[in-house]
Image 1 (cartoon, one colour):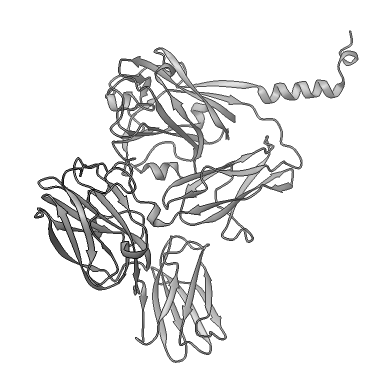
Image 2 (cartoon, rainbow, N blue to C red; image 1 turned 90 degrees about the vertical axis):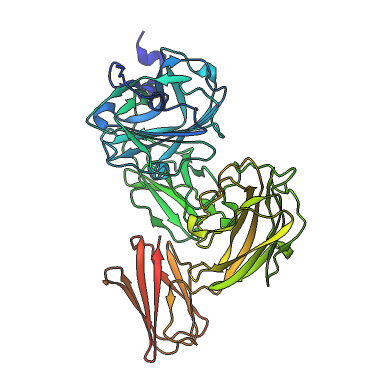
Length: 557
C-alpha cells in the first residue's frame, strides 16, 4: 500500500520530527569505563558518599571526552564497591555548567564553583539505590542543554547533616587516575556545609551521560516562565533560575536580564543558556530573552529577595546543654534598653538556643566609635564569648569577637567593656552570646561550633553614627552615601551644598572613570550614581563646589 494513502504527509513529518528529538546517545567517560587504583577512602566514596555530614565534589569533563551536543537528560556513576553501613537516606543536589576550563588550576570554594551553574537534580537516594557493578543513574529534574564545543563541570552535594550517617567507605565509585591533570576537587565537613578551599585530586569518577539530540527551534519561540530555586536568600547563597514551558531547539539563543525595579532591564554578561545561576548580593528581578531566526520573545520575570542579615546566621547545629547549669541567666548593656533578666536555660527558638525579637528590652541602639559595658549573670563556671556582626555580612567573624570570661563565678555578674568600631555599618545587625562549661574551647572561631554544654542567645541591635567610607572636609557638613558597598546604584544625600556641583569617581589606581555636573543640589535632595557597569572594587568619590570639597571611599561589589 502506498504510504501516503495510509498516513497524511503531516503525520509522517511529525513522526520523523519525534524520532529526531528523541534520538539519544549514551556517552561513557572515560570510554570503556576503565578502573584506576590507589584512591583514599575520601576520594573513592565521591561523588555520593555520606561519611561526613556535608560532602561536595566538582568534576570537569572536556568537550573532547563528551564528543557531542544536545540535552543531557540523565547522568550516572559506576558503583564498584558496596559494604555494610550504607546511608539509609542521602539528600543529593547536582549542579551543572559549561566552562572554558579543562582543569582546576587552583583550589576554590564550593560557592565559586556553583556560581553560574544550574541545579539539575534534587532528590534523595537510599541504600537500595546502589548496586555493586552497576551504574547508579540519576534522571535530571532539569535537563541540561550542552554545546558540543564546551567542557562540562558537574558539582555534587550530599547533605545528610550532623557528623554523617555512613561508614567511611560504605560505597565506592569507579575512577581513573590522570597524573597530568586536576579534574576533580572535593570538600567535606561535619555539622555545617564546607566554606573553605577544596582539595585538588588527579583521580576522577567515571560518568555516563544520556544526551538527547535537539530539533530546530520554533519561530517565534515560546518563552515560557522564569522559575527560581528560591524566592528569598541570604547574601552569598547560590540560586538558580530555569525556564518552564519554553520551546527549545537548535539555533535558538538565550540572554538573561536583570532589573532592580522590574522596569529597566540590562543584559547579564555570559548568561546565554536556558538556565542562570548566581550568588545572591541584592534583591533583583530576572527574565530571559529567547531568539530564533531573528524573532525574539521574553519570558515572565521572577523576583528573588535578599533576606535581612539577621535571618542569615548559623543556628541549626549549635547544640549545648544547660538543663542543670552553664546557662546565661541575664544580659544587659549599660546605658541602653537591652536588659533581659532571669531567662534561665532558654529554648525560645530551638533546644538551648534563643533568638530574641528586636523590640522592648531585648534590643538596643549602639553608636559607632563608642564604648559600652556588657553585663552577664551566669549559672555555673562558664567560658563565654560575644560576637557583633559589625560589617553585616551574615557571619560572626573572628575580628568581631570578644572573650567575656574564661571561668565565671556562678550567679555573679560578669562585666566586660567593648567598643563599637567606627568602621561598623549603620543599621540592624546581630549579636551572639555563647556559654560553655569552663576548660572547653569557646573562642573567636566558635560562633557556629556544636557545643556539649551551655546555650546560645542571639539579639538584634541597631548601629548608628558610623561614617565609614566618608571623609568630611568640614565637621559641620555630612554626606549620607548608601548602600555602601553597592551593586548597581549608589545614592547620595548631602546637606549644605548649593550652586553647581562637580561629581567625580576615580578607581583605585587614580584614573577618572565617571564625572557628572549638577546645576543645583538642594539640601536633603537625593542623587543617584550608576555603578552597574563598573568592575567590582574600591573607588573614590569627590564632590566639589566653589567653597568646599567632600571625599568618600565607595565599594562596588
